[in-house]
Amino acid sequence: MIYIFSLGAGKACPMSSTILTPGDEFDRMEQGMRQKVAVLDFGGQYAHLIVRRCRELGVYSELFPHDVSAESLVEGGTQAIIFSGGPKSVYERDAPMCDLEVFKLGVPILGICYGAQLIAHLKGGVVRRAEQREFGRTEFFVDREDELFHGIRKKLTVWMSHSDRIESLPNSEVLGHTEHSPLAAFRLADRIYGVQFHPEVHHTESGKEIIGNFLFRVCGLQRNWELKGFVRRAIEEVKREVGDGKVICALSGGIDSTTTALLVHKAVGENLTCIYVDHGLMRKNETEELLETFKKLKLRVVHVDARERFMRRLRGVSDPEEKRWIIGEEFIRVFEEEARKLGKVDFLAQGTIYPDRIESARAQSGRRASRIKSHHNVAALPKKMNLKLVEPIKDLYKDEVKEIAKELGLPEEIIKRHPFPGPGLAARIIGEVTEEKLRICREASFIVEEELRRSGWYDKVWQAFAIVGDDLATGVLGDERVLGHVVIVRVVESVEAMTADFARLPYGVLENISRRITNEVKGVTWVAYAISSKPPSTIEPC
Image (cartoon, rainbow, N blue to C red; front, side, top):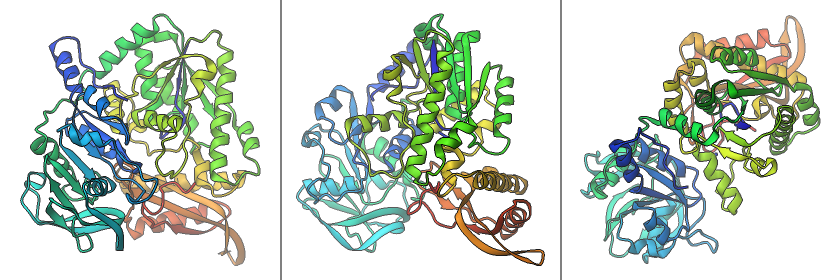
């Protein structure tokens, strides 16, 4: 028996996910996988973005712990190294360091933010707390011609996120500066570079081109990464590994678990049975819509109505972290109960994607980035259930999964659906999850999405929803003064969710949303619009 397990409808290693058909092309790709860019993770929230940008540019890249040995990198075929950013200061006692031997490998190195400061610190430079910190959009000036900035304008708007600055660095060439960072970009001998800003985020002008210059002009790498042929090879691998095994798929309706289900279904056919657990925290009409979609995909689905038991577990709980863990734990319990009804189990197939695996490895090793918010983690489930793992999309990022989903014929309503958190609407309810607040959140969010679709904004933004807490405000309904809930509307624009800006919606759209919510959702008197970006806020409130 096989399980496919993925918590969260919107929803974390050296291995290639690009699989081609057998023959010369596949051999060529496999050879390319042994020539990679290693991104050393110093705990920065944008570390995965660096890997993604390299892959988008056609160069295979992997994320490694910051203290990975130079020997391991050599054995893995590393041709270039990028140091990520991080939350620490290099002069702190517990600041993360790299293996100093990496500087002796003779491969090009690019340090980003903390990574640049670390290079400067280790090479005899001075890094100190800045009198004027730089966060967000900042003007950057290119001071010297260099391959890193080939074809780049002399003045750029870049994304900064740091409290320190490099004040001096011996034997370096200054390539660029900002108003408060005299060494915002530098070059050392042996093709070692550092930039104080983040070229990996889309807020930085020409950021992708700068990374491309490093990969192709500085490092001389060749393009070796594409998704062509992945579906065919993944199906063949599942067939070979599973044989005639029976398959159980825990579907959330998100793109990861649904894509995994379709891949396994193409491999094992009628031996697949899917389990959909309705925890009562889904969007309006979502369960009915998902079941209809699964039917169109010809997936056999067992629908488990677990709404009451989830609400019982959440009663009286206000802490957002506790709510998340309760929901994750209860989901696993429900899944285990349904699994036992189906007899002997041999395999567990999961909709795990590459970021999921990296985060699980961090948790198990004790290495963690500065925690923004905990996520569901099913890493312990296979041990508990004594199953073998099958993870067909384990090396892919979300955007890569979307490409595979399109090839598989996944409906647009799933591919284009806005991300949805694993805890469901509980992540959008501040404080205790009550039936009244759940109703308000569900109805108001439905109106937000409906108005965005009507106005043509739905596909232009990353995520849109309503938030409700315990705050009450006075309103006037008819001729009567009443107390009602305050609903906060959250609509953000983003490319990868690591950073996000609030959407500048037209006033007419906001007016329609506010009018409909106060008129149509009982118990609401005020509607506010969240205009905080990420950072400093997060996208989801809880």
